[in-house]
Image 1 (cartoon, rainbow, N blue to C red):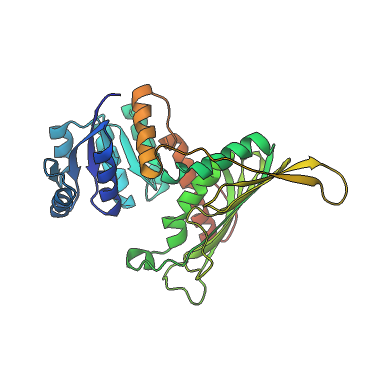
Image 2 (image 1 turned 45 degrees about the horizontal axis):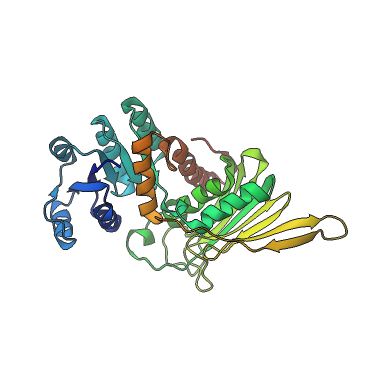
Length: 338
């Protein structure tokens, strides 16, 4: 495999995680790390043992001077639009953090910029690189027949403090993109319409609505229901959510941590059909999380094959978030369009 020169933008928590991941990848040479806070990125590079990097606050200068083969955009969501457009204008592919953008208008502009530049733009949906989720997807497609119902529950009492405590829709804006994207990955279905209600229990420590119930109509007639809260104390779900998929031939459940549980119809008739629960093996993955996203991205650069999270596909997951927000604000069912 070829060695690629990488430029990293963003020096927050995710920026530092990406720096570690890039430094550990033998196919990648991290040549530049930029942030609006030039002093912070210089200190972060030194603390991680990366003193020979180009560091600074000027993305354009780093693109011109370091000539990277790709850019990792780990900046805050409101900066993704500017960083991605600038990199693509230089003819440099981009692997960006989720969510793609802070508005659908910005996201559509970023997709158009990738088309104009004829360069790859991929969004890292790191939770797709989970072996249990992959196993659940394979089983749902291979064993359940036509899918009709998908449910997910996400309940975690997260005392973040900081910006999340003040933002208007912390659950839907900050977290739901992971679960919505996983719903698309599990089923192969895309959003058609949505009805959503956001709310805040009386005890919530968030200023904005930290809980939501959302119903999506998906392609093929599938109905997907999301229930979640950032202020649910006790009995936490997995960060991957808890799932149930119902198809014509049976049901699959996944608690987000252990192997999926599959129960198939063996004989119909009587009040309940006779079913059988199957023991499942989950194959390990060489790279999970952002490491898996990086491997997928490099493979796409090598082969030209579209990776998971390619922008034309990932914008559909983002549209689910903004569709739910619009529905909640208007208190009515709305069409979802990427």
